[in-house]
Length: 105
Image 1 (cartoon, rainbow, N blue to C red):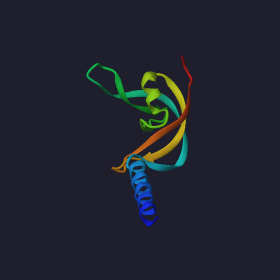
Image 2: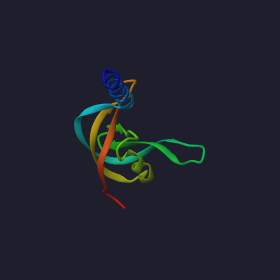
Image 3: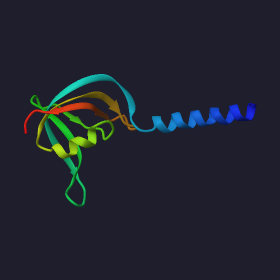
Image 4: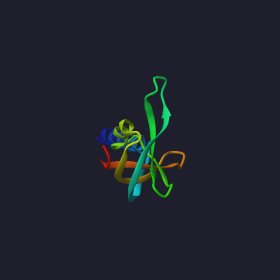
């Protein structure tokens, strides 16, 4: 029984470490309204990284987690995005988008 408990505990700890290895949980919820700006392209010229530029010049780089990957198809569109500010393993702050709406078509 003790061996089974120890194995379960090790599994839980490893799972927690794996899940925590990506982006740190965000605490600050924000709404960013602005244009989706492409920041990087792959070898086929497809957008792979985007940012939101607000009217005041504030930029929010978009995390690929959450609904962030959906924004890759919205380059140059104006959107309103809701989400959490999170930090990656290097401490770089990004916006993890939970929801968004396109303001121009």
